[in-house]
Image (cartoon, helix red, strand yellow):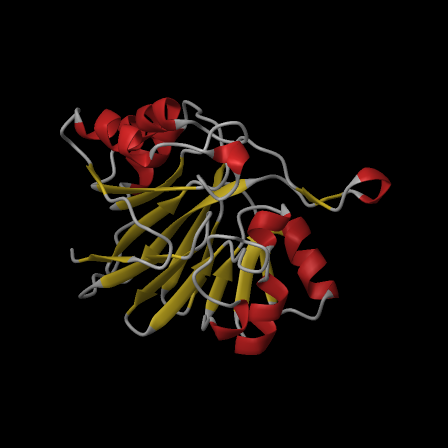
Length: 238
């Protein structure tokens, strides 16, 4: 499961759980919730992407997938039910499921489990879109584990053993995902070299202190915590 090895990867946080990975001329966008996101530093119309990954069907993750995919002629990878939903919207989408892998243009994507829910709409019009997931993305310069929206679970250790991610993108906002304490333990199980917190402070219900998370992780002395502001980037060199 080795990546080919590139020169440098740029990881930009676009607020909430949305990240843009840029490496070797390829742009991978994850969970493009831009419109309606008070922390988004860009407009959905201005984003450029070649590949879009969607962890689950909630509106704050599926977000602007249709708009961005059509505008960029981008390919979308998601769980089967989201793929079917997107195909009906005229989007170029490919389905997969937990435990599987898909390769696209030199990028390998593994789908992992996540403990959450996955639906759009509400009331009598609610529509379930398969199981929530995370992704381990093998970019040319390194491996990125986007955990998706999830609670902590023991098999995170297995994901770490299998994929040895260089960077982990970890939700810390509590209530709907892990809080800082649980997220710090998840990082200990996965053992990435760098971790970037996400899915916090977008809305009042998910207020969290990223510096508390940083202290909890770094007191172990094994993983560097990089706290970004929306719009900021981190550059990874293997």
